[in-house]
Every structure is written in C-alpha cells, then in structure tokens.
Image 1 (cartoon, rainbow, N blue to C red):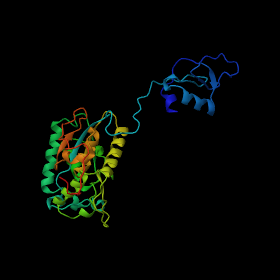
Image 2: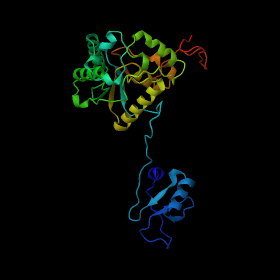
Image 3: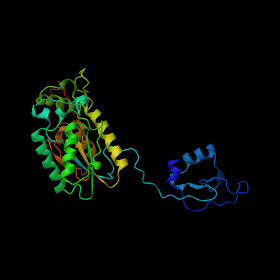
Image 4: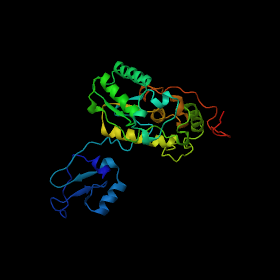
Length: 304
C-alpha cells in the first residue's frame, strides 16, 4: 500500500465504463483501462506499474498525496540526519578513578557507579563547552544512559544550559556501557587486550563471565546504537539531541557507523572522559589506513 499512497495523482479517473457503479473503487492501469479493486487487480497493478503511475479513485473523492519522503529503516551510514547530534562521554566514574573496569548493568544505577570529583569537574567543563557551541540555544533533548554517571552528567548539562529536567530522556538499555565479560573488575589497562581483538574482527567477544556482565563485541554495540538512532530519527525532526554515554565505546562505534568507518577501527575515535563532539557527517576526517586492505592477525589478540 506504500507505493499507492506515495504516488496518487489529483486527476479524476474517467468513468466511461458502464459496468462500474458510480461509487465503485477503481484502479487506472498502465493501459488506461479502469479495473475494479480486488485482490488480483491490486496485486497485478503493484507488480506491473511504476509506483509513480498509480491513480486510485474512491468514488466520492480522489485522494492526492505528494510523493512521500519516507525515512524508512535507519541505516549506517545514513543518507542524511533529520536532527543535530552532540556526543558526550560522561566524566570519570568512581570505579575509573580507582582504575577498575565496571560494566555490569546490575550496578549501573548504584551511587558507586556515579561521577568521581574529577569526573564532576570534567562534566561541568563539557556542559560549558556545549553552551559555547550553542547546542541548546533553541532548545535540546538530552538522552543519557540510565547509568548513574551518565544521568548525573545529563543533569549537569541541563543545569548549565538552562534546560528543564523534563527534557532529559533516560535511555534504559541501548546506551549501557559495553559489557566486557571476564574483564569485569580487572584493571583499566587490560582493556587494551579487548581493543586488540576488536581490530581483528568486529564480532569477537570478550571472554564470558557468570556474574551477569554481558560480553559484547563491537557488532553487538553497533546493533544497540543503531537502534537508538532509529528511535531518535523517528521521534524527532529538526531537533538537537545530546547523547550522553557512560563509556567511550558506545560513542566510537556510533560515530564510526555514522561516517562509514570500518568498525574494527572504532578505537581511533576514542572519547576521553567529559569529551564533547558535534556529529558532522558531511566532514569525514582522514584516518590512518591499515597496512593492507585485508587485515589479518595470526595470533589474536596480540596483533602487530
């Protein structure tokens, strides 16, 4: 039915067929023959005609609709974005200040997962940077992860930019910190092993663990952030949206998808705590190319 709705013309259907009652629904096919609407004729018309050559007459009134610019299913990289986007990584968390990996979603709303004192200062700096960039001059929506540190960051951003808390929209799952499985509780330095695996394959997962922490590949994160963008592009139009993530990986994978960068190279877009970026899909940075178009690693995750 989408093809019909997007191509109806305003011209009336000629009624020179005495076999049709005055108010009978009808289709004008490519041979200018009037056919009554039934399952067979409708399917035949859909399959044989260009969508721009349908005329549908419902008897009393001919309905006209200009060709629709339907958004359809959101794809990466997008053809265009209907909104302005700013990406923000929340400031340093309490766990990060201790040098510990903490990605278990069970504890994401815990006070212990909140911003450290340094993280609060980093976030205030980010909020003023957004203000200088004019992010919320005409209003904005702030979409943080429900994770404690990201939501705290959203509240700081809203306060500095004079945005009502009613414009903070917590996201409950798509912006969770990337689950690092068996690396949970280890030192932050060990994340380099995860990124070494990422550079080989976007589908490689960290080792699993049985404490409820997910073990997510880059591809898993890509699915989540694509779903998020699909919601945002459908729900808003012409608005400004500030996405606040508790970690870097959500944002690097999202930005890589938006600009068409190989997901294995998402680490090249790394966000520091409290970092802010405006999404500009018309300006793609130049990145260091891999040594070969076919990137292979014979001894993962140790790759040269």
